[in-house]
Image (cartoon, rainbow, N blue to C red; front, side):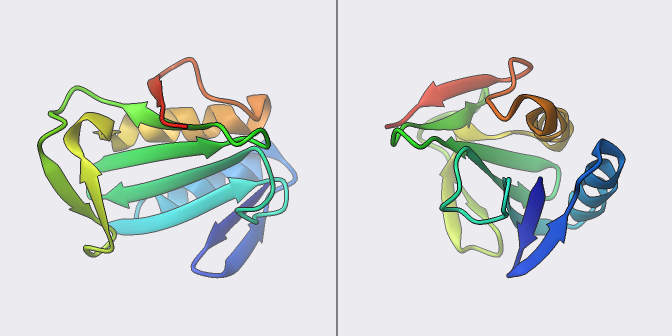
Length: 123
């Protein structure tokens, strides 16, 4: 598995390396991660992570073109800026950083959506 952050590729062959990399990146105030076998958003499945303080949003992209987003308890009408205002996220897509870390760690083993959080299909 490879974590891509701002063009830097962090290869993680072992779960322990992945855990260290994810915990380091998720300790930042704001970050955008792409996680796949190669670290490329063109490699599927690909998990995208946006972190904003103690909030996060996850997207997973599949080769067949389907795309799922994390599903939280916020309001669809609430718009929250993420990643220094580069993205505007609907409140109902936001989950806690803790939930995101658990789901991202699960991705290492499953290469799929974590059953530990709720997802909504968007394409």
